[in-house]
Image (cartoon, rainbow over all chains, first blue to last red; front, side, top):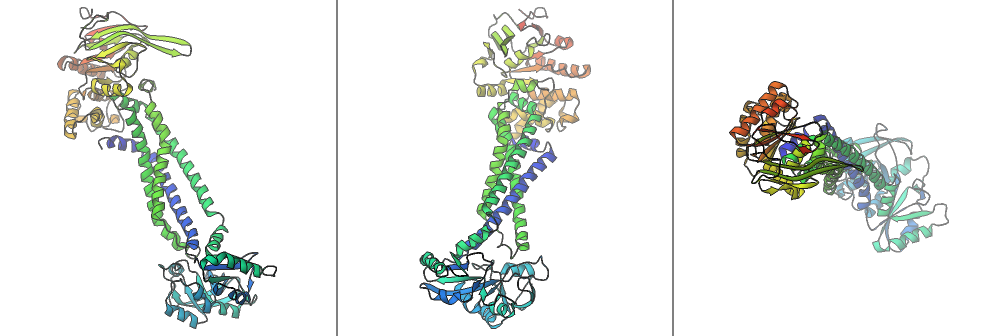
Length: 380
Length: 240
């Protein structure tokens, strides 16, 4: 404790330099926090996937349709409990920047397959009763201030025209899918108004009796429709969600590459800063040694400076991340699942800051430790 | 009494057969050659000589900052030339007070904090440290400047803070390397007065390297060094 004065005096020696170095740590850790939250968001779809559900899509691409007639054929397969179908709508609310996903669902079968969407029976009954009804995920509702009873106009992009919906339910945020549920509305309404592609669906979701049978049932579905104009590709919902994320690129790899670049840059910047700081203080460190301070003390003094900068900057960055992530999450509602900085990632961030602090300071600290007093005092 | 013949007994500082050789490539530079020295408690010794004669090297060796090629140095019964690095560091903290030509104060610390530095290595309480620091600053006449940073002090005042830092832990002896080398005459005299007073009133043993003949006259004995060899002293009767 009595040595803290020496540490603080050195830290505040060049206030601008210390502030900038702390700032670089803060920005790096802010970036780390945001990337960690994005990574979690991308894995959330897969985490929320039902183990007893398969997703069946066109083998060529998900944007290619499948015939509605496939539903009955799949229902005939052993082990299949229910089949529902969906269509990607892709409309715009008020302005093009207000994008959020809208999906047309088959009301009679959707909730039998996707059981955990976080709405009450009353809300679902209201949905079933109104052809223009829509249910919205909580994050989208929060972003656009939608509430039950609102009448929402949406401009069709894929399915041209003006579409109008009545909000009858908002999925609960604490349910398994509540926060990631898109804007869902009736397939019947789409089918009625669409100008083309009638009798087709975007993809199917198949609920099966036994999750262990998913490989066999997937194979049976895909084999059954092979050599047809609309060949299928069936995956478990988890695989489908993971593949969906991969369409945007290998998120984990991108995060790792960006993180590594930030880490290495931080090491170089801080290492250079600390090395400069030590070079400027060679005589002072030599005087400390002459007064009787040990080599080990000098090592710890320099390391402590680096660690203090790293920890203060790191915590500042993580605090900023805690503030920024909810705002980002709100702004990206509907595009990404909610962004959350998990406690484990926060701890990892602190460890990252500490590691960077130690690694970047180790070399200057070691050279300070090895400094020969007589040589250092001879320098002008 | 100061001796250079190696025949002193029970002296505070005892140097025997001290050699220091620097190697520059294949060339050997004999900085100190078979040097003997005895200094008693309370002696104030000045070392004079041309640049490169080995004065500072001798001071560094006496202060445990460097190790000799051959020979021994014993201070108050401790043979420092056989000590390990860590032990030598601890010994230095306890026994040596350094006064440097360029003062070498830490610029981001106040006079008080600079003087307190050697005491942080002791087990003294905060209150005890404060008492010691205030006393040391009083001895050098700077008790009213204790909260000033070095850049708020004149060169002479900085050097007086340097002396306060050197004496605050009550070391066995003071090693002063050109303590007036960077000062004007008036400030130099103030510094020399303090050193003289430390020697006479507080019985401090002082070994001082200087180029200034006037500074050397304030010492009890002046030893001349040339090419690594200690020559006979100047002050009559003070040297054997």
